[in-house]
Amino acid sequence: LVHLHKGGKVMFFRSLLGIIFKVRKFTIADCGYLTAVIDTVKAFGEKIETKLPVNKGRAPYCHRCLEKMAIRCAWCGRAIFIGELITLHTPAKDFKIPYYAVVYSKKPLQLVGCLRRSCSCGGDRSGFWYLPGKVLRVESPLEKAMRMGQAVVVGDISDLNEAIK
Image (tube, one colour):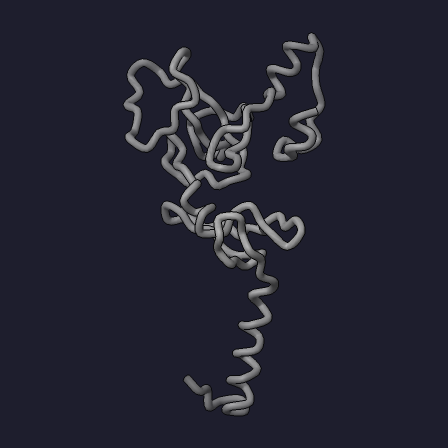
């Protein structure tokens, strides 16, 4: 494809170089694939831009593997990507559990849900959807307040480092 407007072939090569350099850096992932450090992860009709943590020139997973680790919220069905906040909610007795629901515990029954404002599963952060596609359980702000017997201040509910203190 050669663009004939705005300088013809010169503009085409500038565009091509822009695409090449926009991809940024590449790294080898532990899964064996060569991957961009920053790329889009797509799952269940949604997408998110993700930057891989690189240590000594390697990343733990590639973006395509991260796509396979995404799950759906048991209540609204929207995508939950690696690193996102999750809630662990017990459904009402008349709730029909969808086939894609991720069960965190059976007794009591707790399903993994998202923390979107538009979702009906509740808004109490109970953890993060974490590598390699599992729940990283952390104490919720409510649980921490109950344990400490006083109010707690949370600076950033999505900050994993703050959550595990």
